[in-house]
Amino acid sequence: MSLDRLNPADLSPPTGFSHAVVATGGRLVFLAGQTALDTDGKVVGATLPEQFEKALTNLLAALHAAGGTPADLARVTVYATDVADYRTHARDLGRIWKDLAGRDYPAMAVIGTVRLWDEECLVELDGFAVLP
View 1 (tube, rainbow, N blue to C red):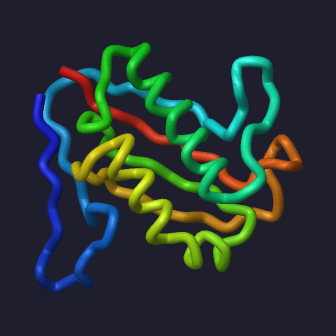
View 2 (view 1 turned 45 degrees about the vertical axis):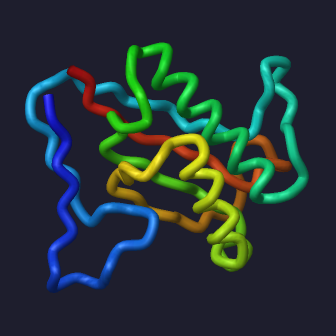
View 3 (view 1 turned 180 degrees about the vertical axis):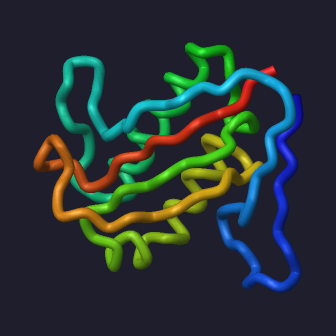
């Protein structure tokens, strides 16, 4: 199994994502949307960076349960209730990503949404991975 991250020179330079990820071989793992819920189902954190860290931790825990690592992520979608706030905290969110998931960036998108299932949640992440 391999994941080849492609960033064509004729596209703008990617920051914190890959323009395309080609998966060869392996098993697909689809990861459900994860928010900043703790094991009791309570929202953790009042700020976007705090909630992003918990949501990413939860996504990676689901991936780990399937036998994967952050390097196996092929696609992640981020749903944010305030895209302007997301952009304001982009450096902090990038640091959190690097600390938890490293520098093998999946194809990514940030989608603005009016609200998430739990009203106090500011961010949700879902995606899929390709495992050997």
